[in-house]
Length: 434
Image (cartoon, rainbow, N blue to C red; front, top):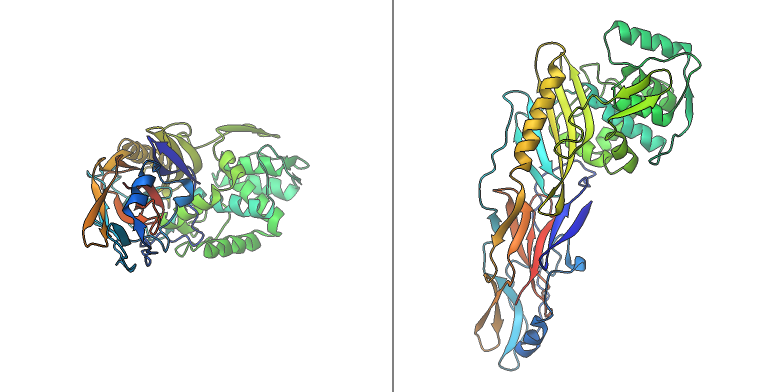
């Protein structure tokens, strides 16, 4: 979720939650530059209003509207000297980047991608648009679909599920195959919340089957639902063949998984669930989360995965505070091959290095210092009046981040300079001009 954070008297936009992109596509979106709403503003009128100018108000935030312009032609007719005609013209390049170069710590295999929520991908390695086995990260979709059909609030247990002899046989089979599982007993009553904890913390494959049958009647029917959901989210490189990810036919890529992560984390119950380090359920007792990075580097989820075919995997979310502002990171680590039973450890190690290197370089960066002339207005006598910013234009971002500059407040006494993400169209910062 986007929030406005005050820096001095400038309002800077930061992100605290998942980016809402139902389509799942993170293709660059050009910042809209529509026609200017021009008008005639007297120089005296503008001078009178300048003392009231400060930061862009919350109502001015968001993607550039039809009243924004990088460069607009005057259309008003002057009637007297000293009258401002038309719209201001941007004096800076419309496309720029934050100074510096980002250097992230990448593995030498597999694929990884990391994104700042609301600001787009900051780095990737490997074939991030190529599908590969994702192991138990599959359970992220399992939990998401269960919660769509059977919503829960934080602290709510939900309906009970009775364990049958068939469920016990399923557990015994998983044990023989050395699959992740939690012990169950015939006649045991387990709530939906407890089942989801068993699914997402110790990554129990037998509970994935239990929930699938409880929801859809059969595992195959539930898997069909998972694939339908993936399609609806625009996850074009994702295909599920089971509900747990043990089958290497369940595949996805980093792009698609980040889409799923951002969507699922909008559910407050889901976000709370994946941040649990341990829980207590019937029969099995205390269960622990396989994600040992929880609570470090702001990491608060989401799902581990590891098999011989998939290697070590992690779909992660992190929330951190930089210069007093909240910021969200989401990312995917896939295909970290290692000796048997050490795959997950390597995947977690890679994720830790990636997140740490990103967080150490994200800061509030000055794009333009106070006093910079950023636009010009034309008066009716043909002269140009410079417009400057009285405060620095600062953006919470990373070195080398692309930024689009536009002008807003066209046709008013309060023109604004806006910094927008060209990737997401999200406004990053804004200042009124004087």
